[in-house]
Image 1 (tube, rainbow, N blue to C red):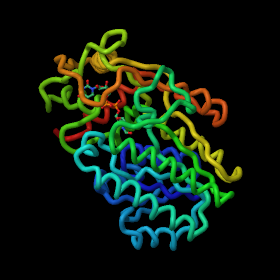
Image 2 (cartoon, helix red, strand yellow):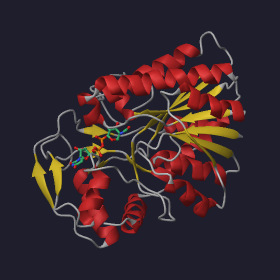
Image 3 (tube, rainbow, N blue to C red):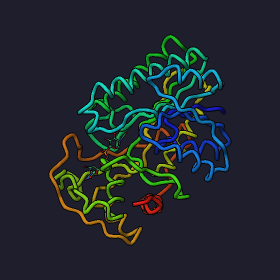
Length: 333
Ligand code: WQD
């Protein structure tokens, strides 16, 4: 299938492009390069041997997007493009609502104009807010505590509403848990701009000697060791979840929702210890106060994706840590 991958040079987008090619699909990328690098295109070619058509386009520039649709007939869109920093969204809500929501509306209008009837949307476990229990199932209540999460919740709702008048439109909502790791080639991975917000990129900068120590945000949660528990999933497993989701494309209209997680929760200290053991490096840390908005425990019940998509995460924590480190070592200090 010919697939438009918006944000296809980003962390999850680039890994998904690689797996789409490996599965025999023809991805086309558009990206505004705000939080990604054009060099990633060459790295995708090195990994797969394939040249991927790339367009520099922006969700908030409909003309730039329309060129992509004029020049290609897509079977489906996998929509990653969007702003995704929780903390930043609290400071810049208007920017997040305009970019993520208005931008996606622009995309959907072009899909309608050019007759593309399938969209796989990059949603997030953040739409579950503070879950009443774990593991989390897709039918759990939804609530959000920050503008970033609210854009995901609103977009799930908007995309769902589009399927009422258009009975042929298939919307697949994939709720990601905590993606870490990197392609086994070590050529692509997560390289956030500035000081990392997320745990694994921060650990990698400490291990590389760029940052002095990891601040562990609280050790007084109601968890086995007091530190926050999350469902860390290898980004390649996450990418393969998108390939599996294509099975639901052209199966009639409506909304399918899937958690993409491993079903296993690890604490912050579990991750530190696993990273040190897997890579033979030290990660100094200090306990700090809790981070506003954090929750104690969040991990998936991934049964539905296994039953309906035939997908489950296969890579273990040691592999996630080794693959992350291999990529981190390839970066210049
Ligand atoms: C994980 C754990 C922290 C950094 C966020 C978004 C979510 C999704 C994934 C986009 C928590 C602890 C972290 C640090 C720490 N993003 N931590 N020190 O918050 O679970 O999820 O990223 O979809 O929407 O909310 O991920 O990696 O920031 O934190 O102790 O320097 O690590 O308290 O327990 P999070 P995270």
